[in-house]
Image (cartoon, rainbow, N blue to C red; front, top):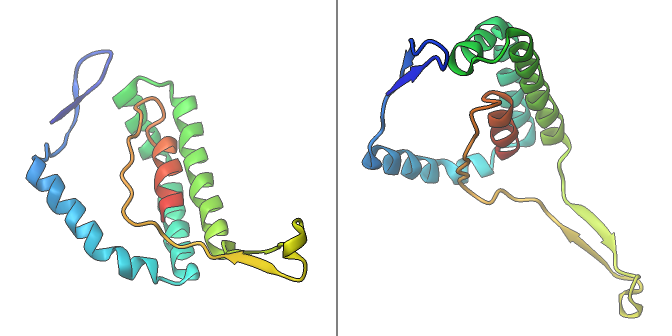
Length: 148
């Protein structure tokens, strides 16, 4: 599959064009990994998210240039988008370290006096996301980072 510059139709990149069977295999592998990933400690998930932010930080210009070539976005805005993407992964890493369940007093109802409820956050499983073209790095980050 060819990615083309919208202004001059030049080929920017060539990507694999996956078949339905390829996609089914990728989804199957994700399902196979979901239990081990769900059991991963919070600090390890935060480490993954921090590492993603660090890698993107080291390559801001490369990511920004790619956005410019693929979408025609001005470089100034592309750099801003990449920086926002880094922030999104960084914020998600912080949330991953502190995301717990919550304890709730049940005394709002007469029958709940002296009682409490709680919930625990647990992963729901494999996530599929559709991402738009107009903010390719940050809107992907807004889906990927919380999923991790």
